Length: 132
Image (cartoon, rainbow, N blue to C red; front, top):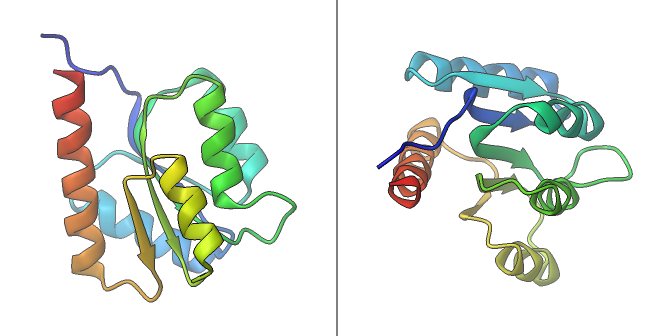
């Protein structure tokens, strides 16, 4: 079977540049090809011409759009990527919206590095199984 073509493995979206950088470095050290963005508009613009296996998004982005808005936009554009939402937001409505968008995992901050790596590994495996 053909494997899902992807230009990068993981698209990271977080408005906290320090956290974005540390997560990108952690995942790159694990062997993933990573591209990070601090604003939703740039991430969506990138995704128009690129493919990625996994989107790792913060919920609160300090803009009019939140991470779930970006997931929804990308899905409407035809993205078949898996998505993991990382947030301190614990509102039930946010969790329900994530479930309705079929977000792979909804992780609450603070996330331990090994927990993040394990979740990314499971999401990537799921993506590869789906593509097979």
